[in-house]
Image (cartoon, rainbow, N blue to C red; front, side, top):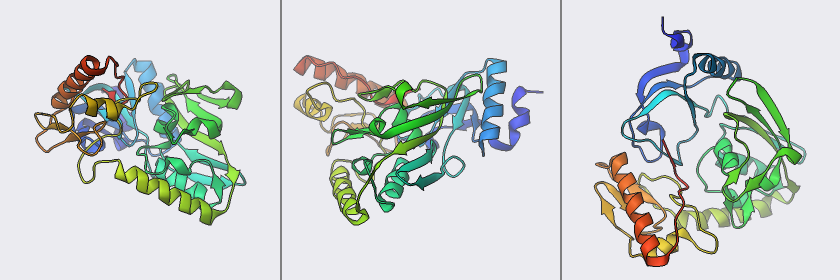
Length: 292
């Protein structure tokens, strides 16, 4: 009997992953698991450790490109509603990692808690935002983290306080297998004023993104002293297309996946962008998009 049969109530075999990512591309997961609570998650992670099966975590899929060949081992989805609880307590907000970042921002604003409103309009889950230290308008999510609870690859829970956490540009030291939940400590403010601020940031963010087309978040990190989008535009790459993958016209740090696109098209386009930007500007672009 295969080891995964005991988890048959929440796993799928050879499940195409494109339907779970914003780009809508890529091959299947050997095993796709969507645990419904922390107990199921812990049991699965411990069994994968015993069986020496590789494990990957998938949240909202907003910053992931899955290769056409698919992914061996187990892909675990940590998503709403099973891991989406958000609770406001005084100046603190406790959020499970599968909650959408947008829902965390809205909850904080509604409770008159300031600090996260500039992050409105950024796709993905709280867990993904923490791992990559999502930022906007010079404001990083890591600045507001008080405590994080994690699950390591052995299936053991670990809690890290503020003094154990390190956040840098688009990175953190949250390198355990699973982020379970985080406690944010925010500042009190007038909810009406916060709502106005949030709406202003949302409008600006929407103006910067391709609308109505399959795409992921930013493809490249902004190099120090530069904006990746400006470098790509300076290299004359706006609208460039390989197969079904196209550099977005509105913001060239997005790649749009047309219906006929494959993951291979996107990967080829990424390499061309990096090469042309290097030739034109001398700057080496670093990927923000995660490639499986």
